[in-house]
Length: 257
Length: 258
Image (cartoon, rainbow over all chains, first blue to last red; front, side, top):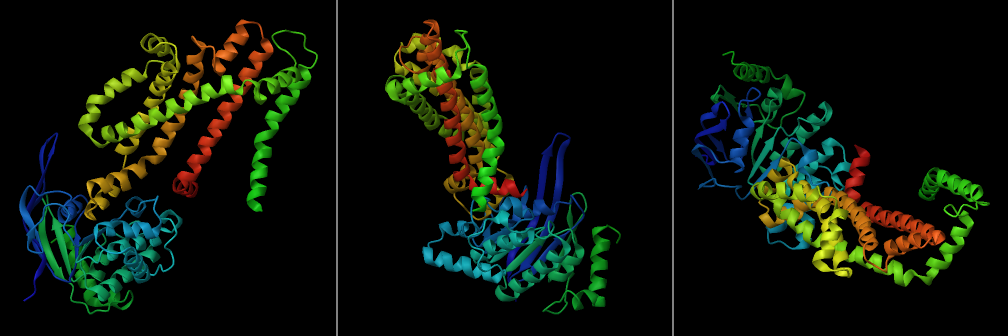
């Protein structure tokens, strides 16, 4: 039996607005299997980011609960790391790459030498060895996003949450980062949840794609992506089953079926 | 080598106009007999006699001392207060209208009130300087701390930084460019008030010296006072810029790239 790393149970989220209460999430239930890569897709404004804020403990659901490691979520859970879309605003511009990565390690009781070692390992994992002393703004967008990923890896998370992680970089860099994420996944097997609007990307990277649809949003489909690992940008994307799955997800996102 | 070259070029580009103006002034005023516009070379001779270093101790040191002490007290009061107010919306709603009202009063106009309250010694001058310099620093600190972007705060919270860590390692560094702008404006106002507070009821200090010189028809002395004030203001501002550039290297580096 597989265990659920994250258990989302009938989660509802309402926002008060001047025109009355807005129901954003209307009863979302889903179990994320330990070690799986799950993408959450859906039309713009459906509440993907809201769900992500609930999963990271930044907001509390109106009803329902989220269980992480057997505990009901209230506030940011231990062992969870994030990579956000806006790398220019999620890395601290006044800290060097090394200090950015080391910042979340402050509350862990590890020696300075160990911190430096972890920073080094994380940077090597993302292919940025030797960039410790640069400032984030001296790096390209793709490299900054690699630093974000390194920062997430340095805390040795059990769960990685990513919000549109590759939305602000150019196409070539995007492919590189996608493959980097696959490599990280193969190396560490971290349970990963990614919010994205890019259906191809979701299909390419995930074990499961969860489609949110409707107002309020509910899970309209869960598509199992049983394409073989390791995946490759050319072969995987040319697989006719890849096309079938992305078509199915596309139709669900568009509300066509 | 290239850096020195670029620096030299900047000095040349920035310097030609002042040099031209001074040369023109020097020549145009050389034969002046107008008592109000004495020749520049006469002013310069008097300047050297007065300030290197005849009256430095009596007139310059008290002004600088008041200025620096008053300004530092303002920094020590306004920054923590700004951090408290900026971190909490509720406090801000209570405090801001009052702050907005008081800061609208021209600080120089309050000097007589401080004289009434504190008399004519340097505590009055320091209090005026502190009062005037506090507002820009306070307002900018509030603004800077409040304007920390949400993504940064979210990131810090998900990585489980404590409240204190978020304050010291995220909010404050993020606010520093804005705080620095406030410090600079505050310092300029402090300088103005330092001089203005001496014009009323003082025998010492640069402001007093210049005023007394004007009142006693010692026009040369008055000119040297004004000149030294200009130079002091310029140099102090320059020091400020250098400190800012060094301590906010990340900010200027980032801005240069954008």
